[in-house]
Length: 224
Image 1 (spheres, rainbow, N blue to C red):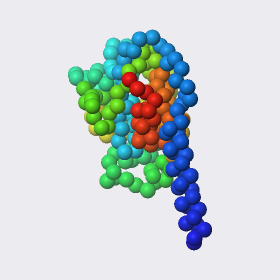
Image 2: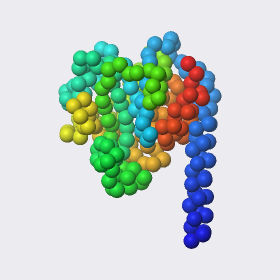
Image 3: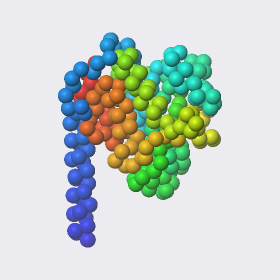
């Protein structure tokens, strides 16, 4: 029994050390030139205790790029909509756990092992800033375009159209799509957000599995 306890404590300590290193070691290691010309766009990272989303400002080009959202009933062009909010995550946990009170064992098991991935899309009006759950970052047009490409490539497609999941949204303004990749505890929703931010020319930690890790590394290496 003591050996088991010792093993568990050692494993937890190792994970903690790796998580700290993953936060304080930047990716990329050197800041270099983020490129892309003048800074013109402001994007947001929206956090809760276990998950992060990216909010991008809507203009005519963005509306056209994601026109399929309106076709699937997500009010991306609705009155007052200023941002599209994208998140990537595990299918079972995302779809079967709209609130913490509805948490079930199977989605947790899949989240800790391997699960299929989905994209969640929602809309927003003005995003409050400053706010504890919101962090804003400025990027160039070129980096913003690269971010849009990354987000679009995260959707699984059938006949060159993102695969919508009918009836899977939490409310009237959001929806789910099948996504590329596989979800697990090591490569999860927050590491997807981190990859997207690096595509946008920002620096993250080397490994950011949790929102606090990602947000701290962003604060350390993206002084704006």
